[in-house]
Amino acid sequence: MEKPMITVENYEVEVIYIRFKGSYTEFRKNSRKMFNELFKYAKKYNLIRENHTKVMTIYHDNPFITDSKNLRTSVAMTVPSNTTIVEEGKIGTMKFGGKYVVLHFELSIGEYEKAWKYAYSDWLLKNDKYTPRDSFPFELYVTEPPEDYKKKSKTDIYIPIE
Amino acid sequence: MDEYIRLINKSEDYIEKNLSQKISLDDLALNANMSKYHFHRIFSKYSEETVKQFITRIKIERSGIFLAVRKDLSITDIAFRYGYNDVSTYNKAFKKHTGMSPLEFRKARNDKNS
Image (cartoon, rainbow over all chains, first blue to last red; front, side, top):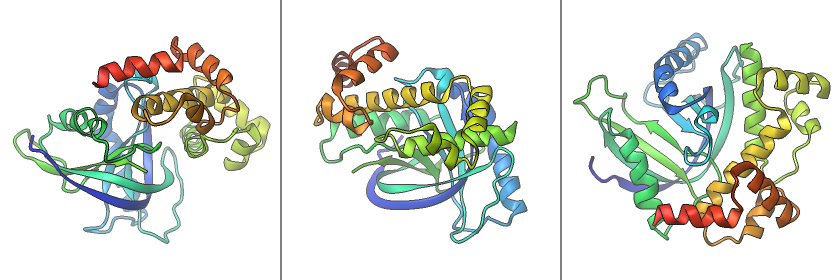
């Protein structure tokens, strides 16, 4: 894993999401199914915009503090602004944003955990430059997540700061 | 069932955005467009905890993250940020949930980070 480029961004977004409650291992077993459901819904309501739509995974809790059975993880997809979204079934909408420090990674499928560890333990918490803000971090897929173990894809980790 | 999961998620989102406030059942029912009675019944049926337990747990857990990463803030500052009027109520709630006082928790987490 190469060290990421780092930028600061003000990011405001509206997404549709499906949330999972349970351990990260259980989440990983379910995530593809959840993304597929999100895509199906987005297609049905014509919400996908080529080169604009972004897909992300949101981590609402901290695994060092929250019991694994209570960990909440959401898969989410950005929606075009000024669109009326019909909430349906499990799919909800949410707006969030603010100031973030963004770590731009190129990751293979096995490197995500390492990237998060680097972002928090090895970098942010050893660095006095940025002050963490109380909001959730997320990973945004800049290019399609890799299908096989050799390829890498661009993934940005967003950490909320003041 | 799916509708209720979505409703609970929506309530969680509302709570997460208002951690520094006292969040009442009225606020949550209003946010969910439901009567207070109906909201409470659905939340308890489809979630494993009551609304009140959920709010307390989220406040304690989120404040725990803050205790660990924001060494510039005093424990009293943190108690206020999470809607507690005084630090002793916060201390008690924190200890009940985690088995440690906020100060002990902060020290333990600092050890891990250094």
